[in-house]
Every structure is written in C-alpha cells, then in structure tokens.
Image 1: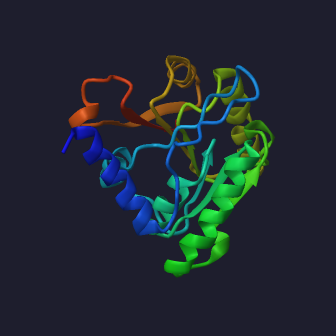
Image 2: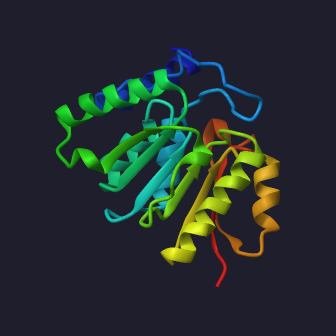
Length: 210
C-alpha cells in the first residue's frame, strides 16, 4: 500500500466513524482574493492538537471557514463542546447541514451544540459565550484583523477568557498577534510524522495578556 493510500484510509475512517463527508473533492472558488480555497484540517493534525489541548463541554468554539464541518463534528465527538461553523460558500454550508443530520443519527446530543452560519466571517456577530476561535488560514490578514476587533469589542460587554487557535497560519497572522498588545502566545504544538519538516504544520494558541 502506498503512503498516500494509507493517509486516505485514515481520513476516510474518521468520516465513517462520525457518519459525515468532509473530504476536499470539491474545492470551490473563493469570492475574492481575500478568501482562500476550502481545505479541511487533516484528522491526524487534529488528533495531535487534542492530545495536548483539551476543551470543556461548556466551551463555545467558532471555526471560521468551516467548510463541511469537520472540526465541528470531531470536536463535539471528543469533548461535547458547542461548535459554531462560519462558512460563506452556500454549497459547503448545505453539505455541513446535511452532515449534521447524519452525525446525529449516530451520536446522541443536543443538535444545537453544532451550529452553522452562512455568512462572511467578518459579519458573524460574536456570541457572548464564544471563547475559542479557530482559523485554518481561511482568508487574508485584513479579514483576520476585522474579526479580532469584533472579538475584542464583544469582550467589552462580556468579559471572559478567550483563545485564538491558528493552524498552518500565515506569517501575517502571526506577526499581527505577536505585535498586538493584548495577546500572548500560550502554546505551540509542532506536528510529527509527515508534518514535522514543514514549519507551517503547527498549531499556535494565543490568549489574552493579563
């Protein structure tokens, strides 16, 4: 068996376990240069992340550029957390909704624990309970900065501890947060195996400075 085939089986295994379809067979075209093509986070990378970064059932995770909802379902399966997926592509949004129906045919739980909004990421209204924000390099740093400002604005009305989780982040994202007076790097998770020789194959977790 070729290595690529083995990885495909691993990806397929988790989709089958969760009773969903989140492969990248349909890449989709972004509306503008500010938005990037759909690419799901590899399950192998998520496994490594969640070995050292545990969520709680009362966490509210927001995945910007969620595609078909892979992170949503995998996170809920492991921790029972509420997960909100933000996706501007209507086709992917509909597939995420279909995945939710299929997921809850096998997994017990509140259907409201997994939500999807079809809108531009910067137009999502931050919920006062949202406390973990996930980005797999879905758009330009200009959009990213708008969302960070939306998050900080929400903290003025609902003070809470929040964290920003970046995967395969652009240098622009990192530069912005490293130079932001309100954020500090809390955790860096470098991936192993086939990922370890790529410096971008890592998770960075930023939190508020105290």
